[in-house]
Image 1 (cartoon, rainbow, N blue to C red):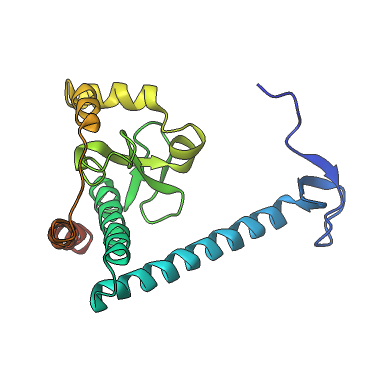
Image 2: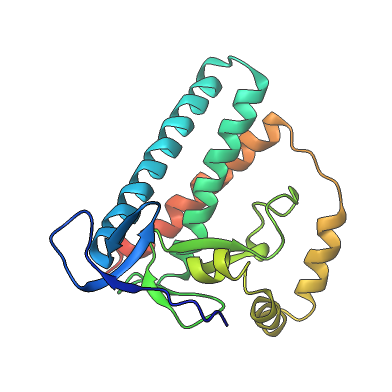
Length: 203
């Protein structure tokens, strides 16, 4: 455990807060409120950049400009649909809340802190859009704890005996998707997404 304090008492360089808990951000000392605002702005900028890139790449599919662009755009669309399916499937139909698979944290399924955590890395293309290989995780478990794999393994094993070993074996198999396969998979996932979204309309 680090002995370095996370905060220091000081005056925020961006607002009027004085003698308050602050964090060092570059050359500035920011109060916790300004830190949250800065993080939210960064998150929004990152989201906008992703949407721009996704729209730009998706244009390649409609116009068939090039195979590489089409593949990238298809993968982004597949990731988007797949993540929503995983999150919505795990959400309570009435409250729309989800609980992280590897810790007790609970959030609304659409919050940025709710992520689609893969047991086997997305680099294993055969398992990237396999529902057996993905569960809802909070950002802390998925990113900061690198998937919280010890708990993830225990829960998967309890849910489906032998599944962790099966997924690890499958991850070794090389797999290369063709454009036609990805397009068909996207069609299938979009249909499944429309189906799972109906759970929120039945209340």
